[in-house]
Length: 310
Image (cartoon, rainbow, N blue to C red; front, side, top):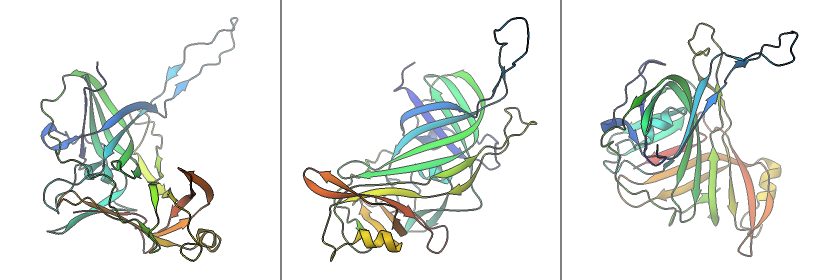
């Protein structure tokens, strides 16, 4: 089985944990670096007192399945109000989707009404079916590179069966825009940065359920603490004062500006209330920089991060 012959299909579930039957024509996701592991695996020890000092065989007590992969940040390649291929994955990580006709598609975190996914993972001859998947998204934007999102989903493993790869999965064919000519700003200051990263840091709860076949109940997102970092070149205090901002807890708006120039393949990231969590010196090719961890607070509620695709 070849690691570069694998396919991910993902589709929103109408009801939690009910297989939504994703198909290759509509639900294929172009991904990189697929990995999986057991989540919450229970192997029960049996420390019996006997005449022998060896251990008895452990007993399996249920598990969930975690699956990870990376996705390129890009638009749909079509109309400005057509959701991008990655939109389904964002919705499974606690984002709400808003389609503004003839204008854009926006994603922002939500606190209620979270959606779940069914994920089919084809492993060059095997098919893993996971239902009730919810997860977390971590974003990385770096100068000259392609924006990437690292997804981690946890779900209920229904089965693993022998299954050929789906024929001709339909991916969007547009090329993602690189991180160049993106007018980054924080608090209105056009800082010179190499990278901006943030993690939704969703708390994914996996409550037990003895009546469930895998020993686990509905998987839920119960909290988030959006945090990240950026690495600006140092500047005069008159232009930018991150020290005072840290001490006074100053919250500032962050924007990437529009990334990309082709209609249907542009995106914009806004964080209305970013604040410094620390500051330390850095060095980039002999130029003094700062390494600044960021926290992203709500401004008016459920708006720590806003993604707009046009």
